[in-house]
View (cartoon, rainbow, N blue to C red):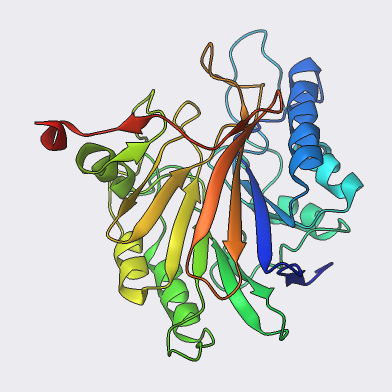
Length: 319
């Protein structure tokens, strides 16, 4: 692990979330994605970049589309911008990073990640590659915030249950154990935490349908068909301030459900589907030392900062 993460002298810690880059072969579309990341990192100068999956695309392509023939090379090209700038970065897997037909497994990709200079991604542990926690130290060099990264999987492995995978019970048990072991503040509460993974929870759909949200929902929430209980575990532990996902490229909304802010990132990649008039970008997150809050905004590829997103009011509240 290259660096220890710290709040800065102003007591702030800023994260850039990049998601769904879908890097394949270093062609023109991939280079547009790189230019986006360069612009965001230049404008924001974050303390950490978090890649929340589908950074590369190793799945099926239509005739004439670019193919990712060397996933390890593609991954290293995709993260070259953060590496070249010396910015610490963390990685978790999406459903397309290591498809079954890919010549590289998650373990292969993780070994490539560990060979870079500035990643803070650790070696695989019991929950498997892509599931781990990072501590952000405060002025006293003790953990003042924690970031949980989880691999949300690919497709359901259960016969008769189609659709996307879900965070497993073993991962949730790991999350609960790690949460119970977190240091306590003087008021007895655990230090605040945020969670990052790829596929949205079913609660993202519930939140849009029942709560005031901010941003766009321009495609269905592609969540797992099975609710494995991760949100319940986070609510019970009481320390998770926010959750950040990707996967649905033209959704970027956020809201609050049972005291936890559920946020979509902004899709960052050009080598995949998007929507006319909906520019790619990144979600920014800023934590504050000693406070149970964060700010979030979007930074778009043209340099625009979006601090206020459109308000969505569900029908039951509007009546």
